Image (tube, rainbow, N blue to C red; front, side):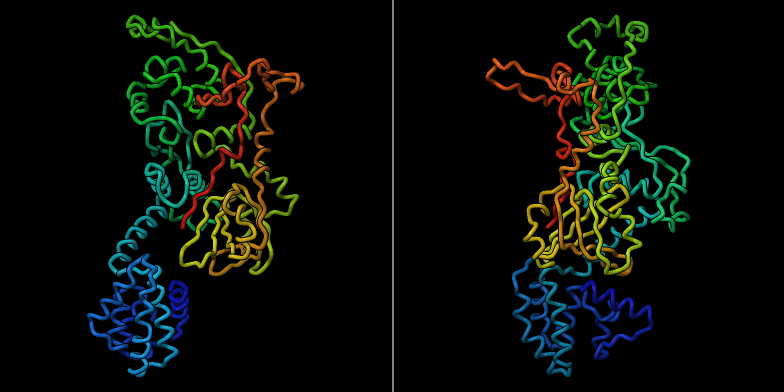
Length: 497
């Protein structure tokens, strides 16, 4: 009933009249433009147009209970059509009217429910339009919930000009915060340029510790409580916060020490230098002393991670990255393959064949869509929507359901500003995510001769060494680099049925 209603709305805007057949039916359907949207309207049509007694109309309403899908609505089909025809309605109109009511058997609401949802949608849309910073922070603090993952909420906020700030030991709290900033309206993406005079935000969003995998709220509350003005070093954080070394290491993995001038690698190095077995460091004498004099961390400048490495580690420990989008590192290869940016779909004529690619964010298979799959893909410029019909899905089932990065070919459909790509070919591009790991900095001139890059085990040992799962970032046991499976840290995509 959605599409007929939208079409009717366009008719009204273009001053085209709506045919209600009879005045008594107009009284029932006028405010929904002749399309039955609510269960109460279906009842009223049955009473007014088909002559159903109220008790029978109520049984019709109960048969339309949401998600029942039991086919009980069809048991009223003959009586309703015959009743409408007997009251002077054309049979074709009666059949069309009942076919709309049939949809309630799959997904129908009482008007009170629809009004409740509509109020939430309206309020949420108002907040998102005027204060995208508040909207983003609120949703991030409410995770896990909703349709999109945190990475997509952050991307959308940035497209609307919101400044996103990283997790930091001296600025973050458990929840995401709003911080004062000079809002730059020129930072709003061109696609949302019409909103430059609407957005009223004056805040930046500081990511909270809740975004870091493996941290607990009580531990982070202790970190904030003992922070004072600020922490000055990794050792200072350890001595004052009461955190375990593993928690501090996880903060280093999340690149949360930038405010004290430490990169991810340098912070991890400093964490490894902590002497947690030396109980003297926690004696009251040292607690009262000036730790800046007692403990001075050696300045060790390590090579900065390359951008691809940074993004991998961000996704691994934060599920998102403020530094870059993974697909941005593949754009040169995509351009050579004539793969369009999602943003460029806005300028493609309706009906033209296109090729797009991106991370799979969402797969939807609504029960009312007769098996059709709706996929949402994301690249560094935004999202694109794809429609996978049954025959195509049967051919590419494993890719549609399992791939994390895909390339899609199909025909573009554009109507009323809504753009879809109807898929006829889909390809798994997940192995290309390995190019990000390929950017890993090499410390030795010859990889095969450098045991730091290719650690060897004692072949006399029968058992293979177990992998390190301590959350130690790029450094595994004894400081050896861990090999990160890039695809495994990228989002899997959310499935909705």
